[in-house]
Length: 156
Image 1 (cartoon, rainbow, N blue to C red):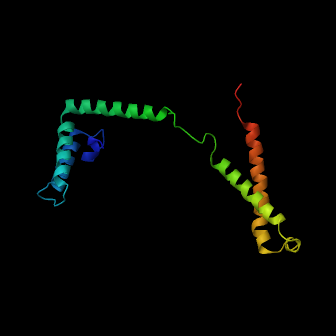
Image 2: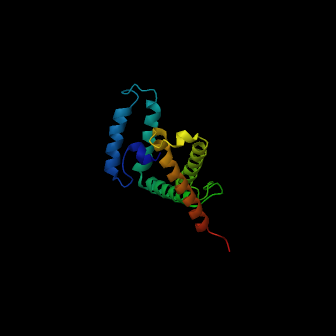
Image 3: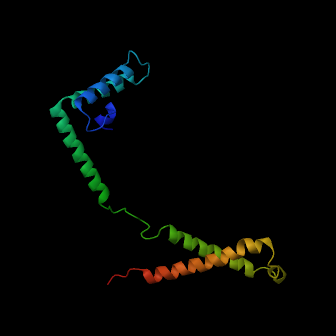
C-alpha cells in the first residue's frame, strides 16, 4: 500500500490537498476519538505518510522509488519464467474437444451394446437426449483432433 493510498489522495495531488486529507483522516481516526483497536497503528501510518508527502524533497525521493518499484514489477511480470504455461497450447477448446470425443465414444459404445428392440425405438427420450449430442461430440472432437494435428508447428 502506497503512502498516497494511506492518505487517500491521488499521486499528483497538490500539497494543499495532502494537508486537507491529513487533517480529515487524523480527525477521523485519532485514538482519542475513535475506539477501534487499531486506531493507534492507523494514526502512525497516517502521520508517517504525511511526514513524507508534505516535504517536497522526501516526496520526490519517494516518487522516484515508487516508479522504480513499479518498473521492476512490470518487468518481472513481462518476463516469462520457467513455470509459465504448464499446459502449453492446451486451452479450453482442446479440453472441450477431448471431453466431447470421449463422451461421444462412450455413448456410442453403450448404444451398440443395447438390445436391438431398444435401438429400434428412436422416439425414446434417451436416444434424443443423448444420441444427437453424442454424434455431434464425436464429429466435433474428431475434427478438432485432426485440425490440431495439421496445424501443429513443427520445428525445422
